[in-house]
Image 1 (cartoon, rainbow, N blue to C red):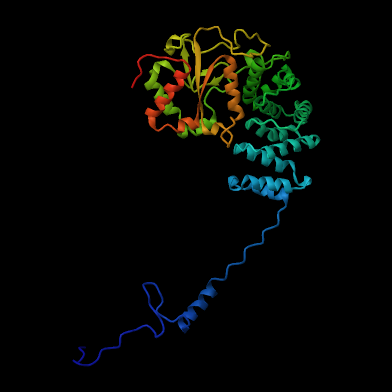
Image 2 (image 1 turned 30 degrees about the vertical axis):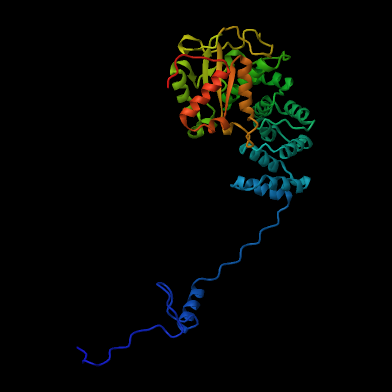
Length: 408
């Protein structure tokens, strides 16, 4: 129905006096009005208040250390926190479980912390009688991995006694302990006599872990061949030996997208030509090399198809039972191995090579290969392929190497 002209229309709805409506989504009613109060009471009824956070238990030294090490976020706990927790722990709180967690933490994160490693070594010595080899292998692991020999004077005598007591009980743990000691260049002869004995070898042959034990025994035999001139005991039979590391290590494969290997390979291809180098070649007794060049006595880089890339193993002038104290080969052609030293090949401080890497380089040098390290700091400073190629040229020329027309 049409409203008569001149009659006022209905009064427009306006906000209640005293309220403001500053923008969309904001209340146009007074904060202390009955409607707002009723809505707030309804909200409190439907949504009960949150309970107060539970009180955190007070953790003391060993408990705090275990809590930190058991956390899934290991690296959020500063190293000083671990050291402080260890220092505050009472002796009875430092259980084998806690110390194994600490050892695994250091090894996993490549933390070469002398104070913590010394604490593990001391614990191992004072708790020797209570520890079995399965626990000891975990406590010893970070020393070999981090290339750290402790100052604790009883460290080696303690391990020798444990090996003598436990070697026949846990074969795999025994070999794991010897692997850590091999990286530290301190293999006890008595333990070697035991693991190379026919009885031990026959015992492990029918076990599920036989393949890994044979690989470790092959590495130990190589260490005896190259580094222990005074050893006269049994050795691993030739028919039992297997390649040590026939392919790039697991960490290198897992981090291949961060590696400099592809760009170095392209630099060598353009610089020398792809017929002048081998990539990922495994040399006897089973070490995988990054890049290998064959070089004449005058320094010329030779085509790989014309040369045997392998040096003899055992070295020709190193009869079985004598150590190769010097690189030995009568072959006029040298073998130069370019060693990528990636960031993860070092302890976290970036200065000390991990034990496995140092061992590989040491053995390749004793076998007669000339090593040319390529440190990650130098490779990371090269901006693009042209700079890297120039860097490789300087490295090779510093060794006195020469080659034909350079590609590009």
